[in-house]
Image (tube, helix red, strand yellow):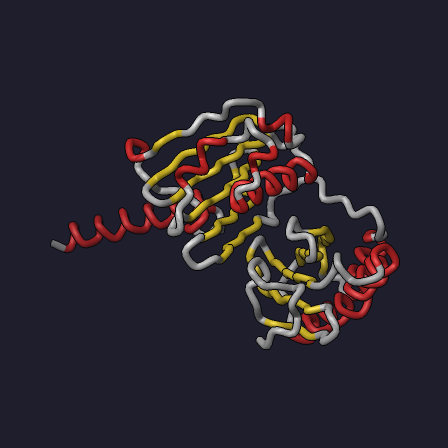
Length: 277
């Protein structure tokens, strides 16, 4: 009996490890676990990727399973942000049913979209999920996830981030690597820091202070110079890691009422910062 118990424990451990490795920290909701035989596949009648200027697309699949319409896009590692955003534009046209402006882009999908339909977009880069968006027509609500661990070219042209990197490393000698980039959710700047060892609360506070007083404020200034208002840096997401393990995360709200908040930045409405948290 004991042998059977130990065997079950080992199998459960192996299974949990395999699931964790497969998802690599990506929420389970982002994956489609529907049965292949229950899917109704829909073919595109034209080259919609040309109409929307979507490049480096390796393959795509569109199918219906129960009340869920799935759009899966698979890109090569050379994909650029423009193609990702154009894919999001295509998805928004599906939701708003304005896709007939581009008549060859999955016209047949309209007949599957009803009041209780959920439409899901998954974007993969090198077979790893980069972005997930779903829209539930019944409750009129979006759900969003973005994998900031995937390296794509998110070059920031208007701000010299290298100075920030140098400053942070001089503030704390324990900092090994710093990445500063715009999230695909355009109103958020991400700062991801890797350290050589664990840091204490005082060091965390020093990094947070620099992030809000220098990085967030500079992005806000540049955005106001360009657009007359802060559109590009309404939120700053800070993540600190040691040995690939997240040891700190926080989001700085960079609107009129500036403050750090414990929020789901993926789904927070940064353009409505009057919301109480």
